[in-house]
Length: 376
Image (cartoon, rainbow, N blue to C red; front, top):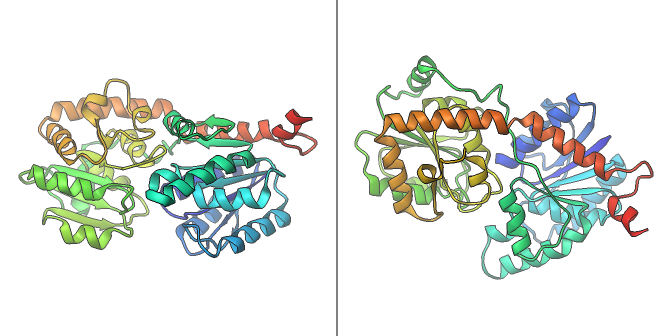
């Protein structure tokens, strides 16, 4: 089975999900083709995972080049003749569905809804498109039940599937005291310094501005906050950050930072199901995150009181971080429970197998889609 993954954006969580999927699909004997802009990390990483990679010129946001992007997607479909088109995130979902228009089994995976990422008239237009475009998706694949319910509440009528994100549990694994000490030494951090780490693109979505406001309110004595990532908000965040905040930049492997941390935090304004908390939990670290899509489904039952705060609430975020930094026993308990939960629920091999089963449900020997078979 040949799968055409149409992808934009080409960094962050979306790219990591695609790379993990194609790696598993190659091992399972599928033929993934990744079509994406060549000027980001995804192209090289997908090729390294075994996918055939083709350039697709597309920017993140809709604009005057949309017609060219749709034509490019249509040409790739004609060239590769895939059994399934899997469009990732809003822009690829827009161009891919308009290029195919139901003629080939199509999966659209929002990776968080576009209309939640914008405001005003742009949000209204994005929602109108998602309501209209759902007719050209044989399945809308959400990574959390909350993401699906958000779509339903917004008025989107679709054929839904929910498959949780997964992570590489062989790579993200708990660290012992020696690994923790070694990770801190590599970053020049004393072993006893309380350390909070935030992993994510420096953007409005990830809410690092709220985290900095919370950190200023906390004034934690001797503690450090590290922001791992890069992005469009970096200059603005640096200008407002206290002296005890370290900007680590983007990292090809965030695991050492997670091992060095006492607490991992992700103060997002919106998500589908973020990968960074899953990775931190698999490493046995307690995670504080905002109560957005996927957060409650990520946490072990019973950790909500300690680990979930409302989005855009720096006071609540400061209180949660202060409570964990001041209680070693609680951090240890939460981290142990998080590690067990992540390893039981979020194995990327399980995620990839479920996605493959979804493809198989959509592909019929005649080449028709499930919708066409129902209408006959």
